[in-house]
Length: 410
Image 1 (cartoon, rainbow, N blue to C red):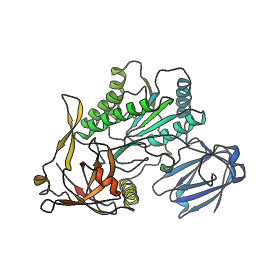
Image 2 (image 1 turned 60 degrees about the horizontal axis):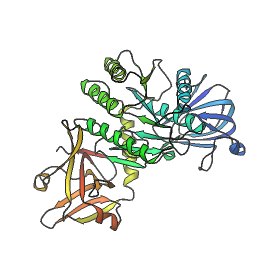
Image 3 (image 1 turned 90 degrees about the vertical axis):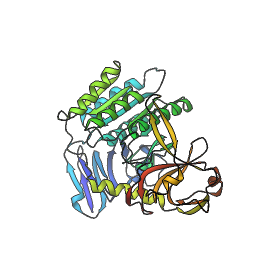
Image 4 (image 1 turned 30 degrees about the vertical axis):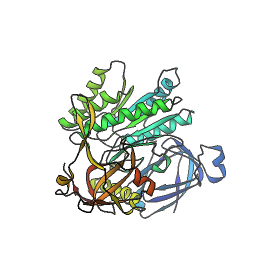
């Protein structure tokens, strides 16, 4: 169908959908989109068909018209389209972006760490908007995604950091340069400390290797409610120590107020922005859609996996724990005789080198102690198989199609 958008209006499009801009000028998450004949005048990247947007299922893109626009829309239902007579990017977002840009252009000793927190949706949308706005100004930076359950950079159960090399619309526009395998989709128990400390190390390593970056954007999950949520976010903020904290404030959530106050108390010069207005244009995924997205990401990752048999030899089976006294992550070896009596089949695993560097992820099928081999599901090359010295056990059990099968409790 053909759809027209007047200047100053926004078309919210829920996927799956394909949009081709025929005339006019659109802004999507801060990225300029032009018709095919004008692409060279706008913000281009290495992708083909710059005037085409592919919107996946369970995603929603805001298409703001800088000037009257004409679109060709392919969607399975007109209910997936909603016209809004204003910009869905609020004035407060624009003001925050402008103030941070001023900070970024100042002389500074280290890149600015910018963290976004909140209970409801909008965090990743804001991250995309800020990232696109910053690189439009010629700034360089990284994106750290710490949300175990709803990853944009890689697959769930991992945390990832990558350099922003092009405008970010979808996960295809950002690639992980450092992946840490956690093995869960929710930071329960010691995972909340393990995620926080892992993020801090990833940032420190990234800054050491990239001397010319201006910023690091830090995306977070929505776990805030409950006492455990407060402990997690307070520890995360204290550990990662962002220079700028942006919070989607909700007056009704006491836990969020506690986190915001603690963030201010532990570092007085930290700049904190509270986004207080309610944005009715954010797309709030329900539980089934979140589950569908996770399954889709796993399924896509597992497409090239196959069954592989590897000799046990001197391979260690480990789990990660948090040592409170050392405030550090420690590896604990798992006794194979104990493990084989647990429901370990199909548990997600991280395949590591002797130095605990991640080679690849996989699913653990069978441990045969008598015949001294393990059967797993991955896409390892022969050389990679030889490098495996440790197998880090996660807690999530999945089918080869990415469906949830249960948990492994160690």
